[in-house]
Each structure stands twice: as structure tokens, then as C-alpha cells.
Amino acid sequence: MGRYEELMAAFAACRETAESRRLTLGEAFASLKESGFVFVCVLQALPFLQPLSLGPVSTALGLSLAVLGWQMARGRPAPWLPARVAGWAPGPATWRRLFTVATKVLGFFRRFTRRRMTSWVSSERGRRAGGLMIAAAGLLISLPLAGIPFNNSLPALAVVSVALGELEEDGFMLVAAAAALVLTVVYFAALAFLLVHAGGAVIGRLGS
Image 1 (cartoon, one colour):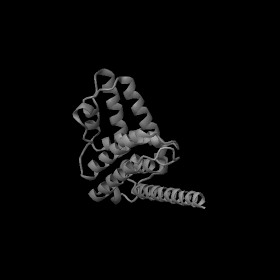
Image 2 (cartoon, rainbow, N blue to C red; image 1 turned 60 degrees about the horizontal axis):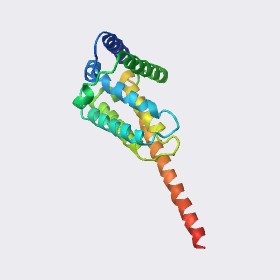
Image 3 (tube, one colour; image 1 turned 90 degrees about the vertical axis):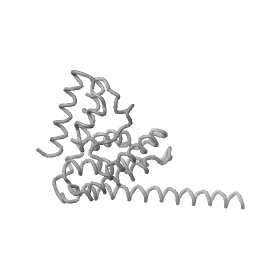
Image 4 (cartoon, rainbow, N blue to C red; image 1 turned 60 degrees about the vertical axis):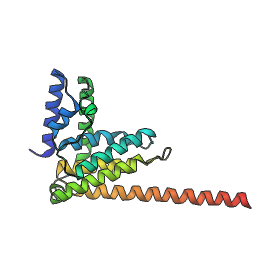
């Protein structure tokens, strides 16, 4: 059974448990083991896979992703959550929605993956690199750039790419994640250049 199938089986088990008793976030992530990082990172990246900026939400979720990525890079076996958050027990309907959305998103994107370059994701160094890329993507998402289209979409794609690389043992997904991060930096640099150029032109006209 591959990692994706193991995650789907864990989803089914958690969903069944949530139907019969209270299931806390801490219990769910512990049962998902290393795949817990994949689950929580994908859920937090989902809102950004669209062109609109989410304002303060971007900052909060971006910083959360940065922390999760750093934990992953440091080799934690499962996501660490504050006691209050870990003890939260969503209702069965909420768990159903969470698992359904995560399953659909992962199922769509995994069409573009296959098992290749496995050493890039199976080694400790590869996992550390993936965690650092998630942390970098989280920091880029957290930048207060409200009103700029697609400013969060590319780093969110980087997060999903790392997650799929972990699940599908597809090292090429780390390359895709790195490319998305580079494109994000280039996009931000181009915007900064245009803003500075436009500002200089306005000041020049006012001074003439």
C-alpha cells in the first residue's frame, strides 16, 4: 500500500471514529502520523488556490504554514499543536467536510504525479528540503499584499506540490515546488519594480 492509500485509509478510520465519538485534532493528526503534515498543510493551502487575496487571513494561515514547515524540516513525526487547538473536537459534519475537500484536492492534483526520483523525498535531506519550502511558502503567503491578484496562489501550489511529493514519492514535485517559489519571488520583484517606476514617474510629473 502506497502513502496515498495509507492516508486515505487513515481518513476513513478517522471519519468513522468521528461519527461514533468526539475526535480531537490532536488524535486525528497523531493517527495520520507523518501524513498529518500533508493533511494540515493542504487544508491551510486550499483557500489560496484562487486569484483573490484574503487579507489578514493570509497572514495568519501563512505564518501557521511557516511553523508547520519548520517542524517538518526539524524532523517532527507529527504536527505539534498548542494544547487548546489539539483538544478541539469538530463535529462529525465538520470532519466529513474536511476529509471530503482534502480527498478531492489531492485526488485532482495526483493525476500529475508518479513515482520518480524517490530518493529526493524518501531521505531525511529531502524531507528537510520539503519542510523548508513549505516554511518559505508560508512566509510568502503571510506578506501583507492585499489587493494583488495571484500573490498567494503560487506559494500555495508549492505547498500542495511538496505534500504530493511526500505522498506519491515523486521527487519531481519538489522541483515543481521550488519553481513555484522562484516564480513567486520574480512576480513580487516585478511588482515592486513597477510600483517604484510608477511612483518615480508621478513624482517627476509633480515636480515639473
